[in-house]
Length: 625
Image 1 (cartoon, helix red, strand yellow):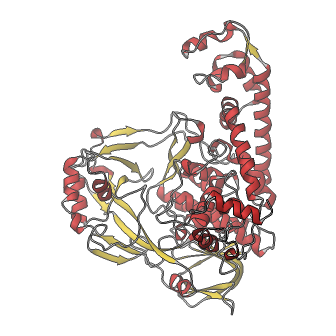
Image 2: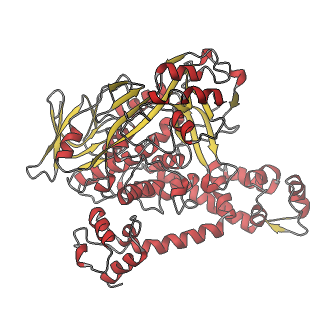
Image 3: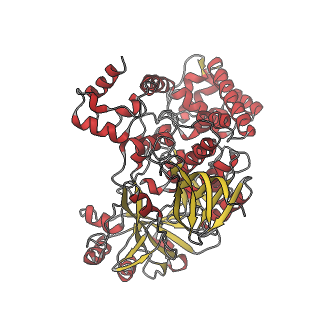
């Protein structure tokens, strides 16, 4: 057993697993420490990956050589592309996974990763340099010391985790799993700002006890896609359905009558919960005028009768949860495997980090995942990937790897965290990005694979596939812009799609500008296009990207111009050690915020809450601009 490593990752959730894989694949000798090696990347809440903006993050992770997309594809039981009725900036992939297979596949991939070692134990303390300004290693509950130049903390909900079910409380990071102690207390003593947050999960349902005839079936896509750009995964050929159910006034009354027993309302829970994923009692209380709330009954896997009731998270007493469930149509004879619960845990103010997710106070110490105040597997995994990359690069003295807001949702996520901080669990939405038409789910590889390849993470086969895709897109656009069709060739399709006929030869790219017409239909119905596509063996992602590039060309160009203008502010660097008290024209609030965040450039300074345009002008004058 070794006791000295390049990188140590504490915690093997979604953040820790991606961090460990990235650091090891970059050539760093990496140790992953977890309390339970059978729970790697455990889906603690719903058995799904992706969703609005979250799906884009998974695609970005995959484009850079992370594992989340591949594991999701290999373990998926249903795939859906959300928001297809809206513009392509909002299209978001989502997949249900087999919960047990997901964890076992993650472990298998990690165990096959070179340079990656494992230790099953709990970390109870960090080892610092004598001046406390750099990390040296960790101490486990068994008293074992492991030394490293970089340590990545990805403790999730385990740091001083406290589980609530009615008036029952128990220490734990997940139901049946013990909490961790020592690290947050140690860092608080060192001056780190520590807070409390809360999350929750619903009861697990025995599918044999549900009357599915009273529910609305929600099948997967007819032609499912997949997350990974890698050729090693394939789209699903069979899928399991989810089901929709609804609460009603009787259910609401049952819950409302027990509010005095809810730790959410009686003061037992001090942590702030996620606004965008509230408990059922919170929804009933906040939206008192609503007579029903939508629920999703989601299968947990191919070979289990266990179901997850999305939308019914609760920390009410067991008997109240059960009584309310019995009043939902289809659940009159329901059995449950375990009740829902809430959990409180420690997190660290993410404004204490720089863009690499390294702490400002301690060199070599990185934070990733829910301990930064985020919620969601995808947000955690994205942070873990970036922390793992930068921890390895730091050890190898190879600089930093930072994604800008116009390059990735992961860049938006991290910039929001370190610049604005959080006062509630942070969840990614497409609306958080000002460049969402540039940051689509179909072009994550075009945006990120070459960047990752240049630092040695994405493999050469990924870069080769990317070059082929980019070349194919260019060829198809060239063909469509240089090929015209006569009225007799296309008017039948135009009539079928209820769009005006053409009276003379028209270029195909002009036809494709019509919202009713899609490239896949031109390939299927117009022989000249079909023959061209068949000669190139076009992939689905290529067809999708070509259509977006043509239909939204003007919008894309305009958004890119704006991004380029904003980038000029990112190029105007600020000294992190500058004394802002010397700039008397700054407002007092601006000075306080700038001293706290210590922005690295004008762009970041302009995004700090409380910094006005006049404050930015003062900084520009200071820089001679």
